[in-house]
Amino acid sequence: MNPMAVFAILLGLVALSTVLGLIWKARTGRVRSVDGDVVRLPEIPRDGRVTLLQFSTEVCAPCVPTRRVLGQIAASTDGVNHVDFDLTHRPDIAARFNVLQTPTTFILDRDGHIRARIGGAPRQSDVRAALDSILAA
Amino acid sequence: MAESIQGTARGIDPRGPRFGAAITGVLLLVTIGLWLSGITLAATIVFAYITIVFAWGAFAGVQRHPYGLFFKSVIRPRLKPPTELEDPTPPTFAQGVGLVITLVGLVLSLIPGVGLALPIAAAAAFVAAFLNSVFAYCLGCQIYLLLVRAGVLGKTGTPAAA
Image (spheres, rainbow over the protein chains, first blue to last red):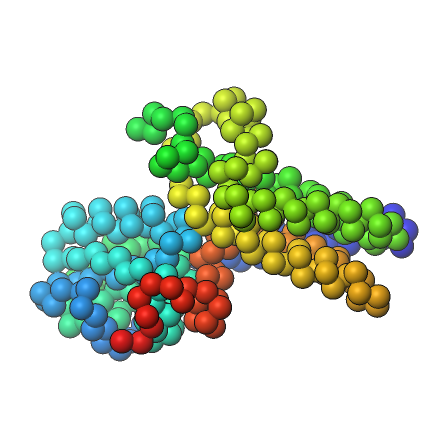
């Protein structure tokens, strides 16, 4: 293959990777409203509060800052709990809630219904906005 | 806050693995370029080197990765301290994923007629290394659960299905 064609292929590979990265970056952490099932886990207190249910694993670097962001929101907002559930050895729970990546965060309303789903590290302002509408309901 | 620069006990500088992924990405492009130019022996040698370095990172841990050690001793002293340190487990897992991809490609490419496995595996590894380096993409976040759910990983610890 001549050098120009080789260079074009390598450039194409870099361009493809850049597009994939931009798509991933645009999608990750986005809050998706859902009208989902009720989540009942022993780890979730049934105290009539809204719950930020975070799913993590041991091989997930952004799970750590996500834990801090969601923990701060829960600490500074009335009526909100934060629960961090480790899926590392619990494929049954990952399958039950169809969790494909970590961190994944569910916002559960007071009755435990999944009202929002966030794949990837969420932004604090997005979570607060979603919480406001759920708390106001 | 992150006053300790040592970062071995509590965590690593997250820029270290991203620096290493950049080097690996460039070498993967070199591999593909050599292969496409018909210099397959040199391509195989560079690719074998990349595979060995992935094995080093996966088995010795990312804290002892050669590019990580270079980053720590030469690059990092010239940068600002990191805003936070990270657990070495996720990047070590990513090294393991890199090892599997490159090792499969390398072994297959040695079989006559399946030489194309080498640039294909190198391209797949390049996409992962590029996303890791440029976008701080976390491979373990996307792949680990899929492997656990497929029963490949995570069998130790609490048994599944109560």
